[in-house]
Amino acid sequence: MKNPVIGVTTFISSEGLRLPENYSIAISGEKGVPVILAKVEDEKLIKKQIENIDGLLLSGGDDIEPAFFGESPHQKIGPIEPGRDLYEMKLIKYALEAGKPILGICRGAQILNVHLGGTMYQDIYSQHGDRTIKHNQDARKDYLSHKVTVTEGTKLHEIVGTTEIRTNSFHHQANKSPAESLKVSAGTEDGIIEAVESTEHDFVIGVQWHPEGTYLVDEASRKIFKAFIKAASELQL
Image (tube, rainbow, N blue to C red; front, side, top):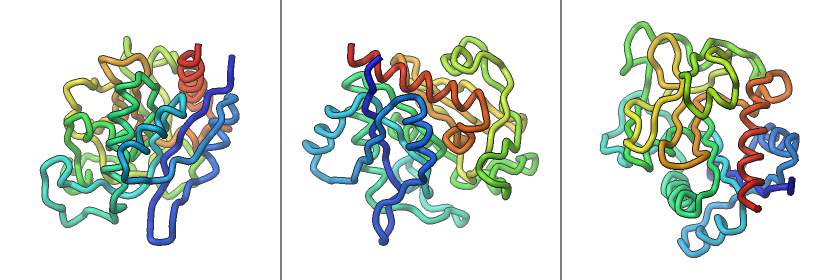
């Protein structure tokens, strides 16, 4: 197997671009080559970025601009990252057109769904209901804080090999209605969507948790990265 190049999006702020090291540890742990994708506005350059990678990883980060799914800002919305949403949606567009594997993590799962026409909860605690469990854990990133049920017959189920896993959790937003070309592949007992995947592409998956944070301690997390890197390497053949 060749070493596939994995383009990873970054957090964007007035201080510049930032990415936790866990992403590169997980990618390189499965013999992928992590490459940082710097935000640009020229669509030709964005397309060239996609042409030069074998897989796209949409990382976590701040909240998503609600205008992209037809809503005004909720009073509980957190910080957004100007320009990032539009840039990442263009990355997704060109990656899908090229048939490149995509793994969306937390915010990445949300922007994937929004780009394809889905909707979101801007704040699950005020918009989803009182039975919502705690999804923004105070424990360290490698702690598996709650159970996630994986739907049989999905790509995610094929990857992890079980219908029940435990995950970490660091979010107050979540996907509400999946886009037409996505299906829900995992959720929590309170009804929050925890994973979506494409019904039209071989490997386009978004997970609401952070498997890069538990990669070193959790088998299911390692399986997700192994499957992603394998899909990217097969694209080279």
